[in-house]
Amino acid sequence: MFSKSLEEALNQQVNAEFWSAYLYLAMACNFEAEGRPGIANWFRIQFQEEQAHAQIFMNYINSRGGRVILRPIAEVPEKWECPVCAFKDTLAHEQKVTAMINNLYAMAEAEHDYATREKLNWFIAEQVEEEETARELIDKFTLIGNDGMGLYMLDQELAARTYNVPSPLATAE
Ligand code: MG
Image (cartoon, rainbow, N blue to C red; front, top):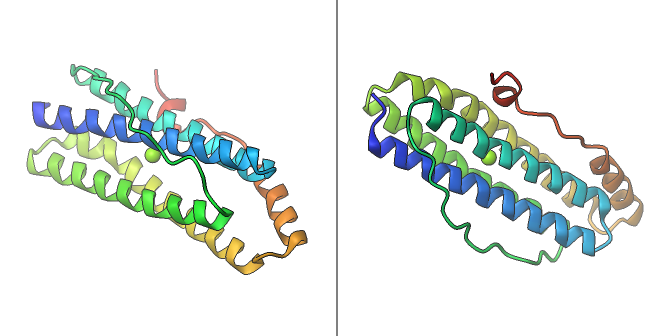
C-alpha cells in the first residue's frame, strides 16, 4: 500500500533535492565569479547529482502509481566568503537531508511499506558518502589555510571531478 502521507512526504523530498541542486548551483556560480574554476566544477557536479536524486524519487513515485507534484523552489544564498564556508554549509545541509531521509525510512517502516524502505537504502548509504566528502574537503581547506600553492593544487584536484550517473538511474528501465 502506497499511502497518501508517504506520497506527500516523498514529494517534499523531491522539492528538497531540487533545493539542494539550486544551493550547489549557487555555490558553483559564486566560485566561478571568484576565479576558482575547480571548486565551481565540483559544485556543478553536485548540482547534477542532486537533480538525479530528485529524478530517482520522481521515478519511484510514478512507479507506485502516485503523482509527482512540483512545487516552487525556495530562494538560496548567493554569496560565500571562502571555500571552507561553502563546504561547512554543504555539510550542515547534508546533515539535514540525512535527517529527512531517516524520517522517510521511519515512516515507511511504520506503515509496513517495505518497497519504499528498500528504495531508501540507496539514499541512506549515499548520505554517508555526502557527509564524509564534505568533512574531508573542510579538513583539506582548513589545513591549507591561505597557502596560495595549496589552494591552487586543491582547485586543480576539484577540477578533475566528473559526473557519474547514480546507479538507480543508470539501471532504470
Ligand atoms: Mg541529495
